[in-house]
Amino acid sequence: MNNALLQLQHLKKFYATQKAVDDISFEITNGSIFGLLGPNGAGKTTLLRMITGIIYPDEGTILFDGGPFNPMNDTAKIGYMPEERGLYKKMKIGEQALYLAQLKGLSRAEALTKIRFWFKKLEMESWWNKKVEDLSKGMSQKLQFVTTVLHEPKLIILDEPFSGLDPVNANLIKEEIFRLAQQGATVIFSTHRMEQVEEICDHIVLVNLGKKILDGNVGDIKQQFKENKFNISFSEQPSATINAAFNVVTQNKNNLVVTIQEGYSTNDVLQFFIDQKVHITQFNEILPSLNDIFIQLVEDSQGAASRKFQAIQ
Image 1 (cartoon, rainbow, N blue to C red):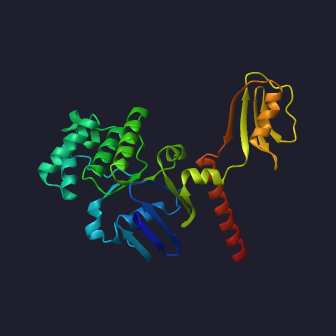
Image 2 (image 1 turned 30 degrees about the vertical axis):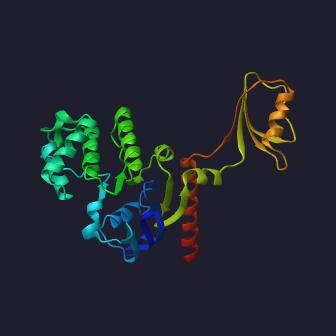
Image 3 (image 1 turned 120 degrees about the horizontal axis):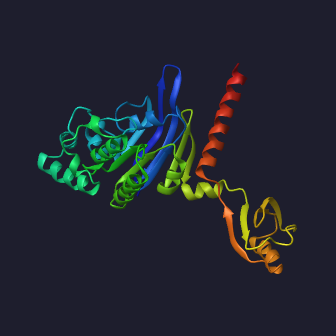
């Protein structure tokens, strides 16, 4: 049995001569926090607009919640928080939240109950009669988050949700994202902040120039791109750092970065320093950050596209 809430199958979308989305397929598991990543102009916004029914694919299929995606019916099960502010500036905050909740199918009584719950949870109770134009960027971001999730959607799409938030409120929203996923919601998280992706997401897809160039579990991806580098720290500087078991990449007083030679293991490296009776305070494998992987793959894909264009010329 397939546990995917959302499946994209060979999606294509063209604007004049530009391939905004060029044969992209992936699926998102129920209850997961999924990262949709890519540089500006990669095709992310077009993908999100197709997933939310704002635009239709030229080719390909979207399956949602066990059947073909029907925007007329299924968008009520989706909460979308765009990067751009989607709020009415002159409208009072409480009235706006109530209006948007009723658009998603809640009765006035249901909407009021849920709005009061979220306003209290996010410390927004005193905002009810404020106008959006009077809010800071961070305050309006909290309001957008509330209006995105208060109808309890099955799929929550968050595009740069921490933009404008101070660390305290960013952590508050992050905790709510985890809680919503634990309760069964599926989250698509789109951002340029790779450290947030590493902290929050289970699975990611990286797109560039309209194509998917990476798809996988975050931990598996970091393992896939590791470079056999290890960090070793000592309480005092070792007397020797030359051995057949490893090569020193960098050395800084009481710290080494090494690569282990073929045929040797981490135990061989540790034993070499133990024999010197030097105290090892830290030994760990260095895994690449998602930011490093992101930059490498985007540069590689853009280089390949440039070479292909030059060949055509």
